[in-house]
Length: 99
Image (cartoon, rainbow, N blue to C red):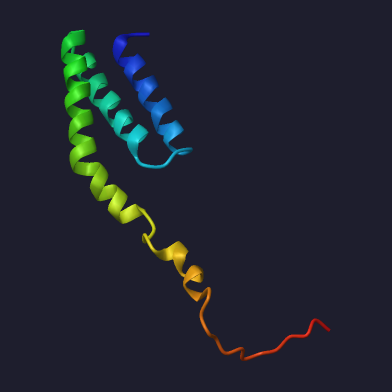
């Protein structure tokens, strides 16, 4: 296997692992592996590949990840709604005696 094929294999593995995690972190590394694979395909050296990987990782994490996390995450207070009912005075509309 050539170097660019290794980058592709690692990138696909990171995308598969992203399915089992949250946060879009491994997917951003997968995108960076794809960018490094393109650089390696055109015959650039390892320094250029690592530079492309680093710059793409920083760009994706700083610019794209916040956008994705904002639109794919559930609302922050959605799980706390039942907790607001505790300790309050409530009217029972239907009585169920267990029969």
